[in-house]
Length: 102
Image 1 (cartoon, rainbow, N blue to C red):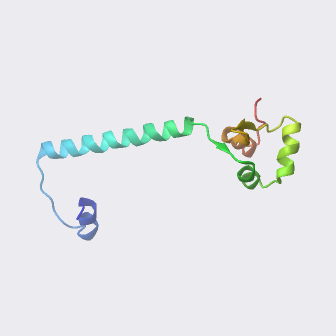
Image 2 (image 1 turned 180 degrees about the horizontal axis):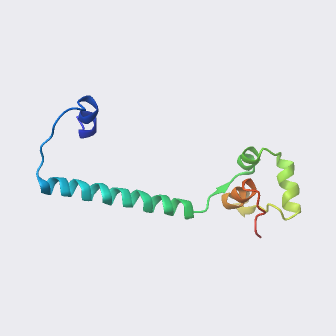
């Protein structure tokens, strides 16, 4: 049984630990939290690319609207392996009411 499960089952349980064990536990928690935060920051910096179907659904428009926007240089896809993909950063800008920068 995991420690957190024991805490959930017995919330009034008193636990005695040594000071150095407490210090190690706190340091471990801080280290793991820092790693999670670093990963989240890395994830947000990583560009993702969506298909026309996904983008049309996200923006609630038709694929012909996406085609027209590409012709108007409003939302221009990139070609990846012969397939059209849209930068998620451009999609987010549109959702925020901003024009994607080309």
